[in-house]
Image (cartoon, rainbow, N blue to C red; front, side, top):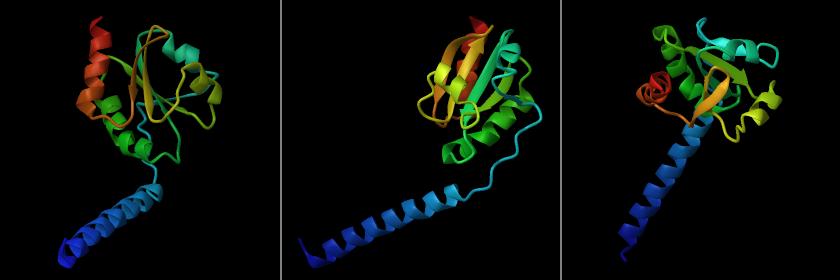
Length: 141
């Protein structure tokens, strides 16, 4: 291997690592997205009441979670444009019992509930289309 090729490879690796570090700190310090008024904030007290009828998409999230910050605008958009189902959020830092009950191991996790029963699960950051496809499948069943 020539020295020039080695310098190019090392340069690309350093640039790639720098990009990863830059994006990590950018997301870590990103301001939280304001929750839409159409999204219901759930806790242990109101969880059963809200989820017992109809289809509810429940987002398990935490304020320190960068992927949760990425998915928040998508959920806001879904909540404001959809009337067939309810969108709700559970802060796992404040409601650990609910996260444990629904076996949330990583966040963001979205659980689709139909009449109080978990019938679907979406883990990680997904597009609006992918989320709606999962919920529409539950609505159709």
